[in-house]
Every structure is written in structure tokens, then in C-alpha cells.
Length: 208
Length: 208
DNA sequence: AGCAACATTGTCCCGAAGGACTAGATAACA
DNA sequence: TGTTATCTAGTCCTTCGGGACAATGTTGCT
Image (cartoon, each protein chain N blue to C red):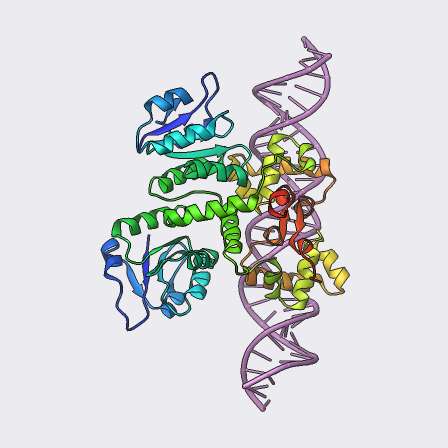
């Protein structure tokens, strides 16, 4: 499997990528248009001016293209995948992740970060009509007391603060939280916050 | 990699699957609930009565679950992936494809047939509507590195996971987080999550 | 040259968070 | 009447998160 890093001439290649693929070639965009062949695995940084065009051309030609971004974003990911890319990730992903991407994409898989895939699923689900098992639905799986605790967690309260506000022992708060994590399949309050929240940076797209 | 075929007791296993994985185990659903361990690759036929529940439980437990259907359909695929499945395909896919699926899904990839992926992209694309390059102004107060860390925090990652993804020491992640908390006047990551997010409950109404 | 900001990492230490295990009290329900 | 779900709460223990303090190297600006 030939690995090719795209790197504008004069710029430095990303060291992280080299760690993942010691024997990869480094080519600038023009060079790549000349030399990349079907089956090659090409890594394109999204800071390139015309990465979209490059991705389209190379993948049309049969290359396996992965786009790496310093600021991963759903819209850019869609651009990339729409142009024919097979993978999309953070440009500073660990070598391990990069190698996984290569393995996955070279076997007809698609590699995107889990949250993005979740977004694909959820929007497609909505588009298909029926409601999805989502947020307030999620809360329906909890008991009243558990919902109360979850609510305070989304307000940024600590266990101790929650205990005081609900007039119960801190230990009991932990008990409820434990039940919540089990029911929703979460590991820790951070994930609970993510589950019950929408990042502000994405509100503009997702609300409208 | 342990491969497990789910097959209701009394039924025949699918010959095609056996061609792909000669050394796979065959288990009925109840057996699987007992014996499947984290990392095992489990193949579930969608004609099972309660395949959805089975998929959810097994994938929760860390197993890699692929759902195979005799009549592949976008809605069923969404059901499967929503329940935690990592792959979805026709039950009579070639051994070659099945092995690809195993390879892909066991490396954090997702495997669905190309048309389905295309549908995901197109519907998500439409849902996102117009583009706009807005970012939360809070994040502008942070350095690049700090933003990268904050972003991963909003994805629910632990410090250790962030360290791995950015290939730095966990201690450095803490350093960045400390700087973030100082700059934004926060106490702990829970408050950071709150600061960067809007509770889903507020997007609609009700709750409490 | 010098200073400031940033990124990196270390050690020590402590409190918060969460799991494992246990258990009493209530209420609903077949 | 036994059973199950819920709420409560205790101990013990481990891991995670974060602050204090110290240090090194780099970059960029004056």
C-alpha cells in the first residue's frame, strides 16, 4: 500500500503523519495529480487552498483519499466525503488512528469520528420521518429522581452541591448517577453532559 | 479475533458466513448474551425477533456487532447502527465482503453499502443548510492548543484520551485545561461543558 | 539581547468521582 | 403475600481531575 502525504511545496510535512507511515512519499498537489495511481492512499490536509478539487480528482482516479483537518467540523467533513474522500479526521490524530484509517478505508470502509457518524445517523433518521430515541426520550428512561440529578448535572453542579439542593446524602447522588450511567451506557458525567447538550458552535447549523 | 455467528437454536447457519470465517463459533442469542466478550466480532441476522436488543447489549459490552439482512433497507440500517452496530450489509454478501467488514469494523470503522452512505451524506448535507464560518467567541480567547483540548472535552473525552489523541502527556492536557479554566473563570470540566453547550432540553421545552 | 507568550513535562498532593458490595424503607403489583 | 422497582445511604477502594511549584525549549516582538 503506497502512502502519499500531500504537502504544499515549501511547507513542512506533519511529523505526526510520518510517525504513522515511515515509508510514505511526500508530494505537493501538482505532483500528486501527476503521479498518484489507483489504489494509493493519499492524505490531504484541509488547509490546502483547493483541497476539495484535489480530493475529487484523485478519488475519481481510484485513489483512497483521507482528509485531515486541524479544526474538524461536520460541514467540512461532508465536503470531503462528498468529494470522494473515504476518511476524515483531526490532522493531529495519533499514528495509531491514522493507521486504522488507512486499514479501514482501503477495505471499502469509511472512517469518521464517532460523533460525526452519530450526527449522520440522527439527521438521516429524522429525514426518514419517525422520531428517534433522542434527548427527552432519553430522559424518559430515567426515574424522576434520576432526572432531577441529571438536570442539575447539566447545570454544572458538583455531587456535593446536588446533594445539598436535593437534601440527600452525597452518596445518594452518586447512587443515582451510577444508575443513570448504567441505563444510558455512559462513562462519567462528562459524557452525560455531552449526551444532554448540543455544542454551541453547531447550533447555527442544526437548529434553523 | 473471535468471530461469533448468532443463530437461533434449531435454525441453520448461513453457509456463506462459514465460507468467510471457517473457525467462527455459532451461538444462539441467549448463549451469546452469556459468552460474548469485549472485542469479539458478532454477526447478527436481522430476521431475529429481538435483534435490536441483542445488538444494543452486545455492543454496549464492547463487542463489535455487524447486522446482516436478507432485505437491506435504510431504516433497518439506521436501527442497527443506532443500537450500536458497526456494520450493516446483505446477509448473502460474499465472503470477501464479510472479511472486509470484520477488518474495517474492528478498527473503529463503519461499514455500510455505498448507496446507504451516500444517503447519509446527502440528507445530512441538506439538514445542515447554508454554510457559515461562525465560531463561539469564547473559544477565541484561547490558544490553538487550548481550543483543541476544549474541543475534545466537548466530545466527552477523558484527559488520558485527549493526551493520546493529541500525542502529548496527560500532564500537558491538564496544563492546558488549567489555563482554560483560569481564562474563562471556570471550576472544572463540567462547567466548561456547560459553557460550550446548550442543554438539549432548552431547544424544545418541558423537562423538569 | 531581552522579555512575553506559548507548549511541553515533571513531581507531590488532595479532593471529586465512581464502582463494588450491602442494606433498610416504601410503594406498587400480580 | 411475595416480588419488583425506587429511594435512600453506609463503607471501602480506585481512578480521575486539578492545583501548586518548578523547569525547558521555542517563537515572536521590541
